[in-house]
Length: 504
Image 1 (spheres, rainbow, N blue to C red):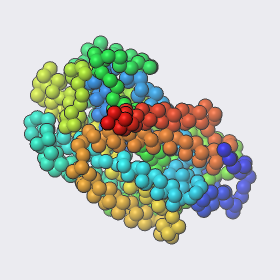
Image 2: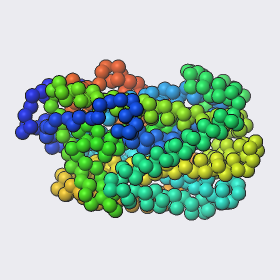
Image 3: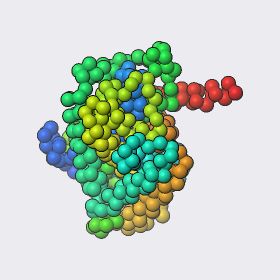
């Protein structure tokens, strides 16, 4: 693949080739606070928490328990591979943002054949994956508390009513805060702490050491698959592929981390700005294009310091949080749900609640429903923001007409797209059941991981100077990520589409 020449010693007046979009201006890389492990919590913590809050509902709370309920802990090793492959994608996407101040989506728009093609390409594919499944599943938890039992088909209207309230609560949060990012960071931090705190207490005092060992062992039982009906029967590749995709973030959720890194101000992002909220964001601006730094010893040292923060957030916050968020609900499932049980469309939000109530009393039924609600609400909140956010950045940077708008007007692109997303969500709630929405979204998300892994690799090799390009082992990791999710997607299509067609 093509790489750019060394850009060292370029004066500020010069520009750097920006591919299919305008060239970058050159500036010095702002210095981060000197890295200390403890200081990292205070200085830059945020993007990883937002990403974790958005991740923890789909794979960790819904699909992980669905897998362990049906197959036990033997398939959790898939999550181990998925999380470590996804964190490579996350960090490599952030590499681009630290260098340019732009989200990785802007990097995609800079590639041939140009921004209109890639905007249309990603929009069409992503559209099939943005079903409001988390609002619906979160609503089933509220409806269960309201009704006194897990909802059924006859209770669909009650669930939909609560799902509307969930959607509009998410909307309310992103209206305020100056930077939309600020409100998200605070809300997601609260929910992540509450969720993990509750699950740790329950698992410590109500789950046996044998179950703990079963789950821990499952993360390292590489290659283990069901062999018989007693092991859960034939492998459901749709469920398994969805689990692999959403074991971390999945879909465009992984590379959307760069939008939050930009708004947090990492690297060159501090020279760019953020998307302002519609209320209280009058003084917040967002440049249409990023800037890149010249390659000097001082800037390279600063880049390495920023990279330490990137590594801290992704490995110590997101990876650790994903494993904890996967393990704790899986323990509840193995301990309190009969083995071999498939998850019902309407009980996915907290189907462990009945078993907990039988052992600890009715109060645990309500507490588990509340936990399930917070988990799924945090994921829906992440989706309500990330969908319009990524398309706003695609339009804001990628289209010449948008680049004529003043720098405080990004919100007038963000909020109309948000309104369209919410309108689609309200319609989609009548088209499919909650858990089915999650499976469809995750399947599309798996294919998007194939595409974004390879696209990110290409962008970083083409636009980044060789001094800060990823090492070979990381480039190989991105290729393996694409292969991993390509295999799951192919097996899903074979089992669910090709084989039924042949057997007709």
